[in-house]
Amino acid sequence: MEEVLTNPKAGYYINRDVFGADGDFITSPEVSQMFGEMIGVWAMCLWEQMGKPNKVNLVELGPGRGTLLADLLHGASKFKNFTDSLHIHMIECSPALQKLQYENLKCATEDGADENEKRINSTIAESPVSWHAMLEQVPTGLPTIIIAHEFFDALPLHQFQKASRGWCEKMVDVTENSSFRFVLSPQPTPATLYLMKRFKWAETEEIARLNHIEVCPKAIDLTQEISKRIAIDGGGALIIDYGVNGIVSNSLQAIRKHKFVDILDNPGSADLSAYVDFAAIRHSAEEVPGASVHGPMTQSQFLGSLGINFRVEALLDNCTEEQAEYLRTGYWRLVGEGEAPFWEGPDDQTPIGMGTRYLAMAIVNQKQGIPVPFQ
Ligand code: SAH
Image (spheres, rainbow, N blue to C red):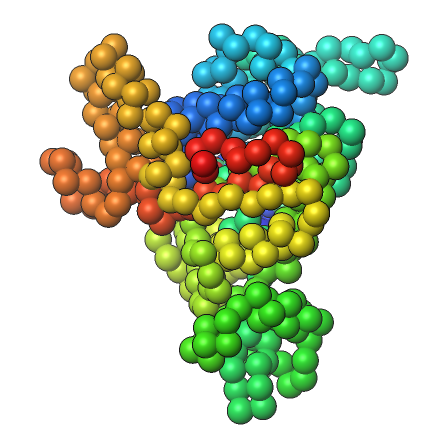
């Protein structure tokens, strides 16, 4: 999964813009500006709880086109004390997407103090921006706000299946005619250690019901890394993704041009993603002293409590009929559930609500108290 998505030559994300109507799938920041604006409200509230530090790392994991942060910065631009504090760090493996992020954040490059040093600023809020391949590369020592929207679902997972000889990992094999097929491992694999760890966090009855299970070691390790950083440096992380608050059985999917396709069909040409196991994230974060975990709550509750209803009304007060239509469908996609009841357009374009499928969870430094809107 990691190779298929992020291989430096042929990885799915590496050479292209995959989002939107002409791409393979659409995400919340691309659906409406209100998404990034609401995340901005969340980040500002957290920053206040952090004691309004005058220097903060704002890290986004997997920023896609950079739309979320661009909307966040536009929305927060009146709050100068907040935007002046920001040092933006983009964690992005794709050079093509890094370039789009540079453009969408309206970046400008200046010469730094010495000849070889370049400084990049987002002119939306005059904040410095830098790019990294991994969170580890972001300098420590500053309080940090981390945003991960649809990032955890792209982390490589391992699938296990119950067989007569016990739990076996599902592996990919090459057949005689060079196509791919799934097989079960003949003996325990290294990822079995993570399966054992995941089982320790589950009830015996929950495990007994399962014949198939997905475990994401990278999600468990990344959560620990985030939690440790926040426990030491202060701040918090917001994770929003589709998923469940418990063990995920069998959710790995491939999407090309907005349609589900076979996982093994032409790897690298379709997005691979899986449901996020929020319970595993919670347990993993709880192992880190000094970090506290809140949620998950549905995206609908999360955005509603942050005031998206007021925002949509304010925007609707001052727009054309065409923009109003766009705002209403965007609002439904973000907070609604199922098909939009008001839709009068073509059936195959009916907006589908993501309000309950997507969950939000926060990990914060314990000393800061409970973050908004998890109280
Ligand atoms: N957050 C964006 C994009 C989600 S798609 C949005 O909501 O629109 C996943 C993003 O994570 C892409 O930008 C992809 O290039 C990046 N990505 C995936 N795996 C990664 C990895 N292992 N390291 C760094 N970036 C990764």
